Image 1 (tube, rainbow, N blue to C red):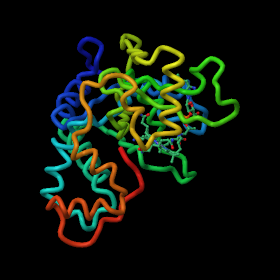
Image 2 (cartoon, rainbow, N blue to C red; image 1 turned 180 degrees about the vertical axis):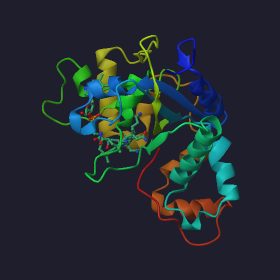
Image 3 (spheres, rainbow, N blue to C red; image 1 turned 120 degrees about the vertical axis):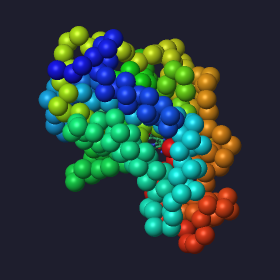
Image 4 (tube, rainbow, N blue to C red; image 1 turned 135 degrees about the vertical axis):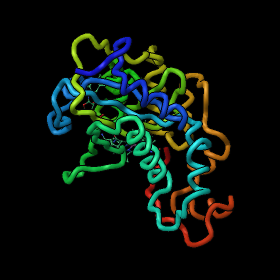
Length: 257
Ligand code: B12
């Protein structure tokens, strides 16, 4: 059983401090809560009482970690500098805070051989209490008939200005019933606002207006916006223009964050 203070395992407290300095947030939950919601093909193959934690990047990660990362790395051989930077940052926080623990780390961009994602980032964010996951099933009489509508997570302080980066599983840390799990804050509670949110995320996601569905405490800086708005194939040229790279473009995956 894990050592706790105020119901939070002490290892999470250490990780929280370490991630905060990097512009990231960590939210713990029990594997069983995630598996209870998802279909079997998406289950995490760990004991129901095992400790899991989801990691989010906040807007300040870009300035606190990514720009310094670009300065100290040769990104020429890097497939995606953001993914590379996040991977390094998370590994270093985990090695620092959990030197004697077995921690499995899964990244949002990793796929299983079945081509399914290793973990469902939005469900994990919801069950951990980090950000409410708004889905079509949260709308009474949805106006879109049978159309598939992708769901979206909204954070009570950051709105949509964050990304869900990774899942940690501390399989040897078993949580008892004394751990109180926080529910996510339902910050888009009116039906008409939920409809607006899903429409922005599905039909106009490129204009980023879904991120401002509620007022946010922090948003991406102009430089961060410029980076993510730039098509991945042209980000190498942008980095060179900013003075970070000298040779050919990086081969990047096609995504924003
Ligand atoms: C594949 C993928 C896509 C695909 C398909 C989207 C999809 N949702 O299926 C495409 C390419 C279209 C896509 C696009 C985008 N994506 Co995308 N995508 C993903 C990815 C890698 C996997 C999603 C997935 O396959 N889900 C599988 C389906 C089956 O899951 P599901 O619909 O949630 O169903 C489960 C839940 O309903 C759950 N469940 C059932 N009942 C209940 C009840 C409750 C209460 C709960 C909580 C759960 C639950 O069980 C179901 C499974 O059994 C995730 C990262 C990740 N690892 O999760 C990012 C992710 C969802 N994408 C993201 C984003 C931002 C985008 C884009 C805006 C582009 C971008 N990256 O900027 C666009 C917007 C969508 C659009 N309009 O096109 C973000 C969303 C952030 C957020 N705030 O929610 C994620 C989380 C990436 C990240 N790192 O932050 N994406």
